Amino acid sequence: MDQVSYTYQNMIGDLEDCGLNLVAAFDISVLPESITNTLPDRAQEDYSSLLLVGTKGSSFWQHLKSINKTQGDCLDEMSQKITIDIFSTHFANARYLVLYPHSEYVIPLQQLGHLVGWGRPSILGPGINIEYGTWFAYRTAMLVSESLPASEYAQAEEVCEQCIDKPCQTACPVSAVKTLGNFNLKSCIGYRVTDDSNCADKCLARLACPIGMDYFYQPDHLAHHGYFSLRSIKRYIENNK
Ligand code: SF4
Ligand code: SF4
Image 1: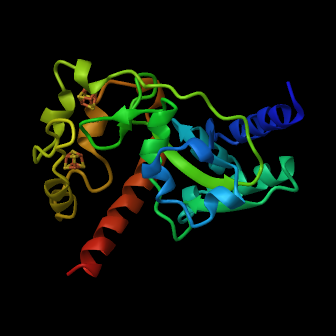
Image 2: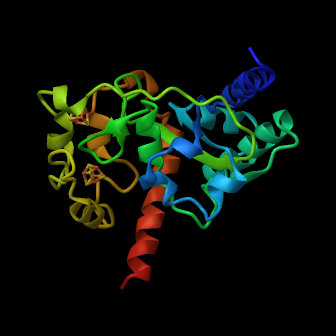
Image 3: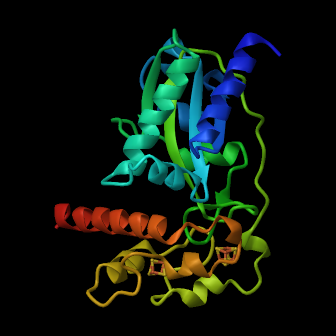
């Protein structure tokens, strides 16, 4: 194993120790145009790799609890901070540019994740993986000047296509969950913000999906997500009146 690969493996180990247990690296010179088009100008000249960090289950949330950092917008703030800290520790001379979560860029995270088999589209909207269901999240993405060992491309197994009963569809109170690519976001959002909504802090359809039960978010993690997603929806509606 060469030095960069060795250092990269150690970096992955440190990220995993913090609950950031999904890590992939991409050679940006061979990414599809649909992704490179979203990157900053001169990305290919100034950087070599794109580092994508995510988490499955509640491991990152548990880590934040262990260091007493579960207040406010902690998932975004702390995942970015921890990823930068760990990357910079291992690759001290490398430059980086954060693409997600806190940046001016909007990059197709799901498309990147699908390239390495983290998930494939579900009828609920978010990606789904046969092992951990919908219980995973993209936490940090950044361009780095170091040429990291590129992850192998992989195709995640089909999940919703094989699911006969589709309990997520019947669990949704407003029938927003339909077929692949036809999720009714307007109905979902409209219902979530009503005063007597049963989905203010959770998605009943997502909870009804039997895939990835071992990775279900812990109740306080779920509530945290629910609170912040509802807050974002309300802000969006307010700003677009
Ligand atoms: S319940 Fe079935 S159809 Fe619905 S999200 Fe889960 S796997 Fe897909
Ligand atoms: S949040 Fe509620 S309304 Fe929206 S898809 Fe989930 S179950 Fe349906």
